[in-house]
Length: 56
Image 1 (cartoon, helix red, strand yellow):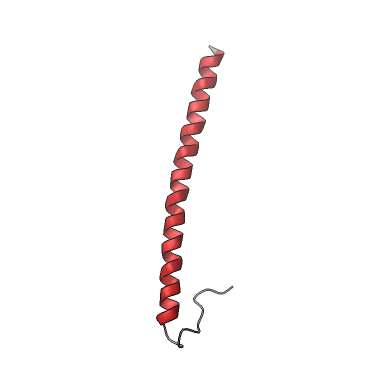
Image 2 (cartoon, rainbow, N blue to C red):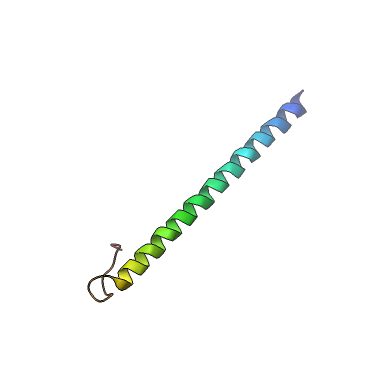
């Protein structure tokens, strides 16, 4: 009975980790798109491309 519970627990942990990794990939893609849009808007925006769209 204990090995069965351990296998089920391991499967649940791996399923949860896989789901979290997939979500993180989508978050990374969204952040990359936002960064690229900001970079393009900065280079074609007012101020001759000298302005920064972030405050670092």
